[in-house]
Length: 232
Image 1 (cartoon, rainbow, N blue to C red):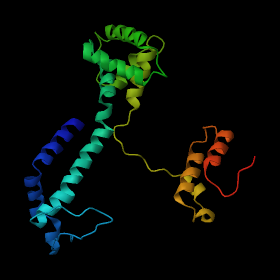
Image 2: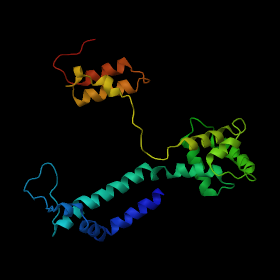
Image 3: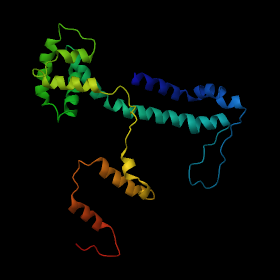
Image 4: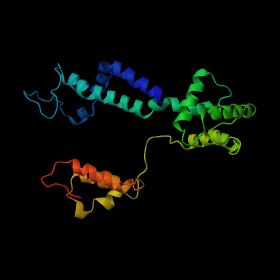
């Protein structure tokens, strides 16, 4: 689905002139009798680049808004989903009755990604072959049905990978939290602290499982130039 969406967006990007012309004709601003204008060009620009030379307001917003937005959106989709495509394809190997050379490499990538929790690739691929012989006769509609017939003691690695696949999120949306570390860190007594200190306190509060080595902290503090020597 993501691949189809990205292909569609790329086609819109390639034909940006005609696609944006359709949007521009139906712009919501016309309903409120608003006139769109271009930003002025100045001799010295400090906060942003001067817009490119365009003949019309429509061309200006197509070049400065529509095209950059599409490029960024396509890039974000690729980063979030397609970069992990080989891993997702590795999960698909768990439900096939046979594997070709390419699929075998995809399954190897999956095993290497979860290497701290599963055994070596040779053991996993041998276990997968036995699992495939088991599912030759049985047909299941989804991963939830597959995990029910996958014995954890007989197929520990396959069972773990199917369980991971069942618990993968279907979207990147995160639920709202009823609690936050910021409530404990940024109190009214610390309301005026700068961003650097806030980031440091937040990391210490969130990652409490990481042991802080005092000697390394002191060595790092000693590297900063000070008017007064740091004596320990």
